Image 1 (cartoon, rainbow, N blue to C red):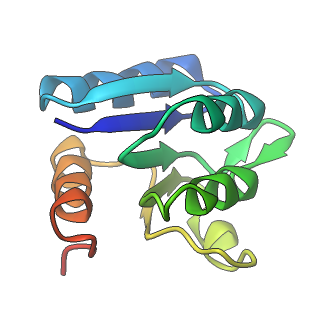
Image 2 (cartoon, one colour):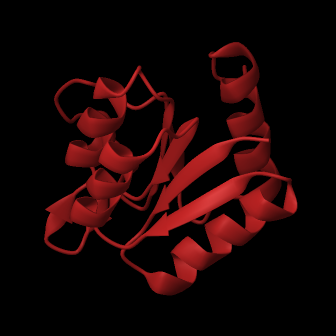
Amino acid sequence: MARILCVDDEEVAVRLKCSILERAGHTATPACSADEAIAHLDAAVFDAVVTDWRLGEESGRAIVQAAKSHASTPVVVVSGFVSEAFRAAEPSADLYLEKPVNPDELLKIINALLGSGLPPE
């Protein structure tokens, strides 16, 4: 179905997100840092990005900026720091979800973003 980049500095969390997306038929590529995620975005085309906001010493802002510079790729921020991420400078992510995220909710949101380009209501 879709190629999705999953970014989280916690290896268990990124594997879990990838597994959830892959079970739904998507191809998920893991990245554990902003630098690794940006390298993936520079090397390949992704249909969507799911990223944490705080990545150790790095910020998810660079990932959102890189994704939006690549044909406005939809970005979902899944973080324990949603309010911080939401207040960050432009460009904004398409949607912000608080950790821990419900797997069914994540899939519903990703599928809605991929299908219509708009977040679900």
